[in-house]
Length: 152
Image (tube, rainbow, N blue to C red; front, side, top):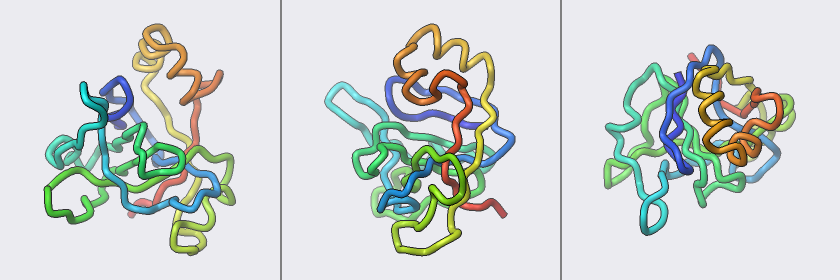
C-alpha cells in the first residue's frame, strides 16, 4: 500500500513492488522531511502518521529534494530527529537502475528502479479531480518507476 502525504492530496494506493523515484540527482537516498501542504506553506508530518510498516509513503513537494519527492518505503525506520517528525529519503522517477546511480554519497547499487502498481480507483479519482497533477506524476500511462532502497 502507498500513501501520498504531500501535494494537494492525502491518499492511499496499493503497491505490489517497491517505491521511490530516481534519476541521476545528487540527493538520491538523502534524508528528507516528509511534509504536506498547509495554509502557510509546507507542514511537517508527525511520525505517527507514517508509522505503518506495511505501507509506502510519498510526500510530493519536498524542497529538500532535487525532484521534490521524499519517500518512506514499507518496513523502513524513521531516521532519528529531535522533533519526532516523519522523515524519508529523496527519490526521483527512473527508467532503469542506472538512473538511480550513484546515491547522494556516491555509492553504487544502493537504490533500484522499481515500478509502482497503483490502485485503479485512486488513479481514476485523481485523474478526474486533478488532471494536471495526474499527468505530472504518472504521465499518460499511469505507471511510474522510482528509485527505492531494496527491501529486506
